[in-house]
Structures are given as structure tokens and as C-alpha cells.
Image 1 (spheres, rainbow, N blue to C red):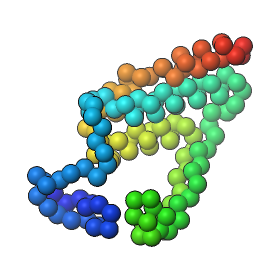
Image 2 (cartoon, helix red, strand yellow):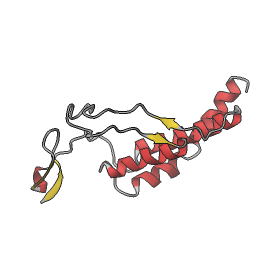
Image 3 (cartoon, one colour):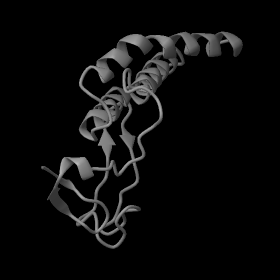
Image 4 (tube, rainbow, N blue to C red):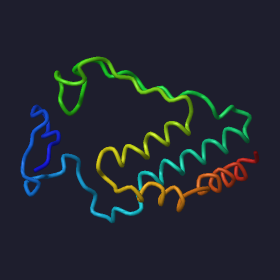
Length: 137
């Protein structure tokens, strides 16, 4: 038996694990390493290097538009019960939250995120260096 969210309009329910089906589409590729965590690592490295080298403080806040009560695309007119707004103090915090969301959402096991960060670390910086070289910066 597992207890989990049962999908739009169904709240949390307990049912046989053999009847579990992932709500979010499970991508047809290996679970290790997390491709999403790799992209977040790439984005963090690229933006941190690029902004620093172009004289922009990389510690700018990342602010997403608020989602009003009932504004969910998954459960419209039902969730969230109150306004939600994601605000991160900088790109590092957003990349961390994005990578961790892969674990929290059950898409990956524990080693997938750190494995992706290790594999993809500095890739964004290499690309940013090339972009700056091509633009004469």
C-alpha cells in the first residue's frame, strides 16, 4: 500500500502499489544521471560566469509571476488555495531548488542529482567563454 496524491480532483489516497501510475510523464531514458539537474547546473555555471565577466552582479533575484488561488493548470479553480510566488535570491538558489525538485517529485533517486552536477559542472562556463570570445568580449 502507498499513500500519495491521486491526481487532479482526487486529493491524497491509499492504494495498492501495483496500481500506481506516475502522474507526470516518465521520460523514456535512464534515471541516472538526471538530465534536468545537468541543465540546472549548466544554467547556473553559464549565467554566473557570463554575468560576472560582463560586469553584472550574478546575485540578482529570480522572481516568477505569482499563481493566484485556483490558478493551477493541473487543478484549475481548486489549487493553490492561496497565492504562490517563487522567488529565489540568485541563480544558484534557483538551480538548487530545480535540481532538488527532481528528487522531491519522485523522478529520480538520490544519487542522480549529485551525479549530474558532477558530470555537467563547468560545461556552462566553457560555453559562456566561447560566447564571449565570439562576441569580442
